[in-house]
Length: 313
Image (cartoon, rainbow, N blue to C red; front, top):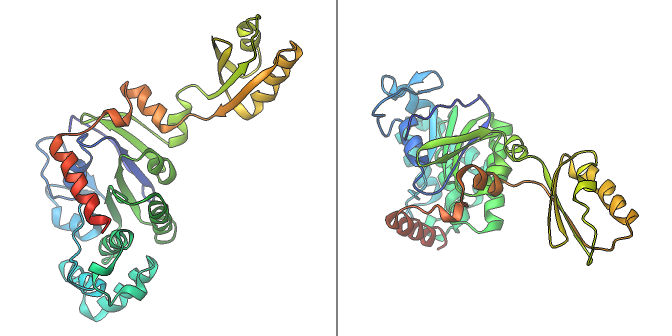
């Protein structure tokens, strides 16, 4: 990490968005006291990560990137083991376990061996283990890595529910743009160990300048650049082979005026599209490349493939 600085608000889902190797897991390991910082300082819920590590461990939960559940044990047995590690009294552990498993839709599978679980169920069991001691702060390291799209969306629903119903503060790392956009109240984009942008998903997207309207005209001899640029809410107009790319504020309001102006010139419109900025475009703007181009090391790539094979069994 390279002298990063940020704060997380109580009760929010805070996202660390970046490619493999950017420093996301390293940050989580330091904040959960698994790794000592070489310099600087950090606190979690007011406790210092170096001087008060035991207090931090008692109030945080961790859902690691790699699966740690034991396939030879049942869901209940895995949870009982985790309860002992967190010093949850056995007098209350079983009821608490059933409550947590029920919250995550695993109550009926508690007595089944984990080897019979789907990939999504294993990830939910991993999430349940991080909740067994009712943490104040929950760290989620790539919580949906390797899951199919449908199961990933289901996991998002569970995570949102935990934030809304249990009021848990969450720190989430991901390299999925849509996941960060769907879940996070605020996002820090991290690249090569540096935070290069930090704001709400909406503000990050709006920082690009607005919505994009693309309108293709039919063999037009007139250049409408200046005319379109003079319309309200239009910030920039680019014309390439009669395809106009128009940056606007509030695209859904600006689009009717643009279409009306073109039709007044008796020009046929071949195609119109309106797109809001995406986090992919934000990442491209701030880093100069797409997320797909920012791959980690060969070892990290092999590690991710091994993990995805495990979770998909």
